[in-house]
Image (cartoon, rainbow, N blue to C red; front, side):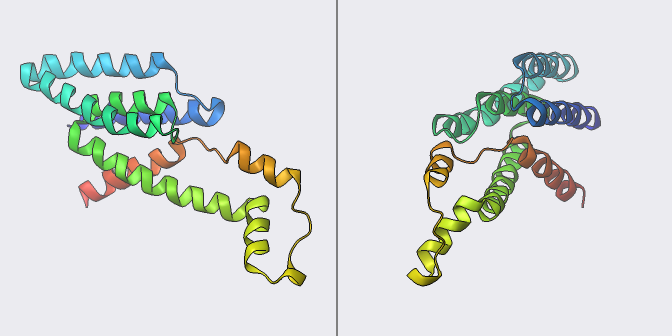
Length: 169
C-alpha cells in the first residue's frame, strides 16, 4: 500500500510539473506509469492485482473521458487518471477525481472573479446604466471566445492531498 501511494505521488508530482510548465502531460509518462502499475500489481498480487489495475484504470478513464468529450479537460488528464487508477485502484481514483473537480470549480470561480472582462460584464449587468463601465469592447468578446484555461493538475494535486489526508485522519 505504501509503495503504490508513493508511486502515485511521484506520478502526480511529475505530471504537475509538466502540466504547469507546458500545459500538457506526456503520453510516455502516463503509459510508463500504467505499465509499471500493471507489472507491480501483477507480480505482487497475481490475478487479483491485475484485476485491481484493470478496475482502477477503467474507473479513472471512463468518467474523465466524458469530461474530455465535453471539452472540460485535455486528453493528457484522461490518460493520467487512467494511470493513477492503475496504481491506487478504483475507489481512491474516484475520490481523487471528485475532489479534483471540486477544486477545479473553486479555481474557476476565482479566475472568473479576478478576470477583468468577466468582472466588467457582471458589473455592467448588475449596475444601473449611469454606474456601468464603458469599456465593453472587443477585448471582452475575445476573452469570452477564448475562454479561461488553467492546468487541471492545479486542481488534481490538492484533490489527491485531500484524499490522502482524509484517508489517514
